[in-house]
Each structure stands twice: as structure tokens, then as C-alpha cells.
Amino acid sequence: MSRDAANKKLPTLSAGSIVKMAGDLSGKLIQRNWKRFVIAVPLVWLLIFFIVPFVIVLKISLAEGMIARPPFTPLFEWAEDLSFTISVTFENFRFLVTDDLYYSSYLNSLFLAGKSTIICLLIGYPMAYGIARSRSDIRGILLLMVVLPFWTSFLLRIYAWMGLLNKNGIINGALLSMGIIDEPLNMMFTEGAIYVGIVYSYLPFMILPLYATMEKLDESLNEAAADLGGKPFTVFYTVTLPLTLPGIVAGSLLVFIPATGEYVIPALLGNYDTLMIGRVLFDEFFSNRDWPVASAVAVALLAFLVVPIMMYQHFQAKDGERS
Amino acid sequence: MKKRSTFLLSVLVFGFAFLYVPILSLIFYSFNSSRLATIWGGFSVKWYGELFQNDLIINAALLSFRIAAVSATFSVILGVLAGLALSRFGRFRGRLAFTGMITAPLVMPEVITGLSLLLLFVSMEDLVGWPNGRGVTTITIAHITFSMAYVAIIVQSALSGMEENLEEAAMDLGGKPLRVLWDITLPLLMPAMIAGWLLSFTMSLDDLVIASFVSGPGSSTLPMVIFSKVKLGVTPDINALATLIILAVALGVICAGLIMRHQARQKYRL
Picture (cartoon, rainbow over the protein chains, first blue to last red):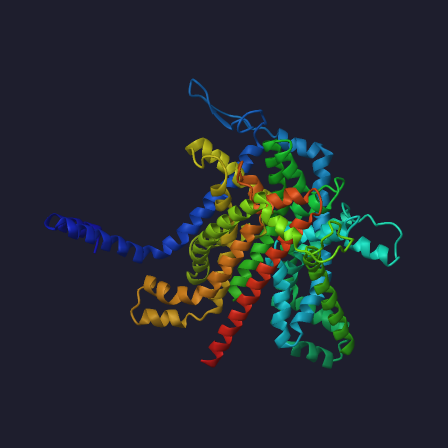
């Protein structure tokens, strides 16, 4: 029934039945359009709280800093005579390019994240393979043991390493008491400590996607290749490795992207010489209160990460279609 | 063959030791009566007593629990809707963009998410007068935004593993789409929804960076209090707090695992 037909009938009806009809009508509208509703609600939420914020960051990165609340110049200004001025400045980005601090922290973060990703892969790959090849009754327990640290507090797990690596911490205490070293080793506040922290916290993110691809792996392929005379390494290189490539890519991106912008790990375990861009952004914002520069740092970081993020999404989408 | 499995076994042992030694050391030293980690001063629970005397920590914990519960509930609602759209609606216009928007928060560095949300809240306050200052509301909104992505992925994978037969049968028998959704799909999604709620809850409870950006005066969450304490060095009462949190989470995860195993067994029996 169309809305017009419903309207024509209205005059002859009592108030109560009008309410009932309106209810039915809206019920029908929901019945017919519920799919649109299901899409619209999360879509609108993400538009407001995920997409619009990026537009604002971009906008503020093009503004000038000033001492005010909020501490930046407006991009658009309505003057008295209703003339409209747009003031855009690329000063913040020029500042990023000319100041060594930013340049080296971007590079440092990318290198640190890249190397940590490789270390995660070197440890995670055989672990995932070992879990996938283990007896089916203990496989579930091993998998649970990989997931468990992921559920426990990230911050507290980094804190645990502070207790281990400290000058008068557990590792130094143990080594000293065993007489292996005479003086405590300097492990805290070093670049090595940052590597340990990143590898430790992101290892489960590497193992899980790897395990997911290895679980589907058909052992008979390996056997066939071996029967045909392939040496173990050749079999691994020509059969296993290519088949697990999707897991390698997904796991590496899941480690690399968030590790690049990491704040907590360098703040707690690192020294001030090892610059990481997440920490620079955080300090720029909270200590220097320079919102436009912090926004420019964020925009530049995002520009570095756009390619890996799109790669990750491409894999996610393909994965979703396959299953 | 034998050689390879010893290699795999040693990697597994080393890997799991790497994952668990720090956590176990934290638990172990929370019962140390000495303040120094290197000296074992005898078994004691005095740090736990000190922890419960600390009003700052207790209040922050209560605040964090409240934020986590509310944001987890909303994330499940939004995440289920998004997951349904992703796996049951086939190809709709803008699907690619929609998928992109769902998966991007999963990998976005926290500093970027935090900064951009803060700037949004400041601009909104300027334009429409809402939110009036920052605090619990803004932290909750931020947490909903990143948790719903995780819930959506969990729900999507649960739905894609689920046969559509039941839903189709219900439709064939004359069930209206919403009825089918309510009576068939949602009950089947219950385990995924519970898992999503728990994951959102723990992630909200754990978030430091985003909360630091969007919180206001007087709304310090538990991670913010822990971080400001821990920056100054290792303190035994934080060891005690960590032990309590880790044990609670471990118990929760193990219980959930047992329940799911039990359910899976019952399914096979049917």
C-alpha cells in the first residue's frame, strides 16, 4: 500500500487507529528497509568518528599555531564585510622536512618496525608451523597459549619487561649471582629493549594469521614433493613457503603498521636517542602543545602507512570473499 | 624428519618461554616482601593490601570498568550490524569503502586515532557545543569506534562459517527477514557476540594512548594511572595489580575456552 492510499483513508479513522496505522506503516518501512538501516548505523558512526576526524587533522595541519583555545588559526574566516578568506599554510610540513628530528624519527620508526617484523617472522613462522603440526589434542591448548597474552594488558606486559631488564632487575640479578657478569648490564633504555618490547607484544599477531594458513595446508603435497626427490629445504622453499605467503603478508602487516606508530614501548623501554615518531607526535602534542605540527606529523605518518594499510585491506577483502 | 621435529619443538619451547617468563616473573615478585626485585625477602601479600588502600588506583579502576562495560555493549551492537552487512548482504553499493572503513581502525596507529578524535571533539564543541568538555563520554565514544571493528570481524567470520541453510529454511517457511534475524541468526551469533564483548571490554580496559588524548581533567583511567606510576620505575603494588588483572583474564579466557569446547562436543553428539 502506498503512502497516498493511507493518507486518503485517514479522515474516516479514529485517533487510535491512526496511531496504529502509523505504527504499521513505520513497521513496514523498517521491514522493507532494514538492510539499509543495518548498513547505515555503523556507516554513519564510522563517518562521524573515523573519517571526519581525519579531515579535521588534515585541516589543522594546514593551520598556524597560536596561543589560544583551541591553539591554532581558523582555516576559514568570515570578515565583517562577509568576505571569505581561506588561510592555508604549508609551514608545518616545511618544518617537518627541514627539521632533522622528524626526518630521522620517521626513518628510525620504519627501520625499527621493519626489523622487528622480520624478527617476529623468524620466531613466529616455526612456532606457527610447530603448532599446526602438533597433535590435535594439544593444538588447541597451544593456540590458547598464543592468544592468552593478547588478551592480557599490553601496558602491564611491557611493564613486566621493565622488571626484567632493569639495572637491578631480574636478569641482571640472576647473571650476577651466577657469576657470569661482574657488573650489571645496561639493558633498559636501549634500542635493544625496544626491539624486545615490540617483538614480545606483537608476536601473537604474527603467529595467528600464519597458523590460519598453515592449518589448511595439505601435508600430502609435502610428501608428494619429497617422494619426487625434493630435499627438505627445496620442498619448503618451493611448496610450503609459497602456500603460506598470504599468512606471511597478513602477519607482517599486522606487526609492521601499528609498530611504526608505537608510543608505549619506546616511552617505557627506550632512551631519548632512539626517536620514534609515535613518541615525537605524543610529546609534540602534550609537552609543546603545538597542535598544527602534531597534526602534520600525523598526516605524514599516515602517508607513509597508506600503502601497507591498503595492502592489508586488500588481503582482508580477499580473505572474506574466499570464506 | 626426526631432526625437523626437534627443531620445531625447541622453537616452541623457546617461543612460549619468551611469551610467558615476563608474565610469570611479574606474578612471582608481587609476593615478594622486599621492594627490590633482586632480593627475595620472603612471601608476603602486603603489596595487595597496599593496593586496596590506594584510592587513586581503586577509583581509576572503577572508572575504567564502567567505560569498558558501556563501550563493549555499544561495540557489540554496532559490530553485529556491520558484520551482518559484510557477510550477508552480498555486493551492495559502496561495499569496498565500507569494508575499508571497518578494517582500517584495526591497524591504525593509536597516536593517529587519538589525535584525530580529540581534534574532532574540540571542533564539535566549537560548532555545536557538544561534547561539553572531555571525559568519560569522549573516551567511551573513542573505545566504541576501535572496538566495533574487532566485533565486526569476529561476527563476519562466525557468519561465514555458519551455513545459511537455517536462515533460508526459516525464510521459506514464511519468516519475515527481521524475525529470521532475531529468532535464528542472532541466537546462532551468541558465542561470537560474547567473544566480541569480552575482547572490546579488555581492549577498553587496556587502552592508554587514545584515552590520554580524549580524556579531560578528573577522568584518569586505570592505564593512565598505571602509566604515570610506572614511568618512574618498578613498584611492587603495580606488580600486585598486574597479577590480579592477568589472573582474572586468564581465568576468563580458559573458562570461555572450556565452554566453547563443551558446546562443540554437544554439537557433535546431536
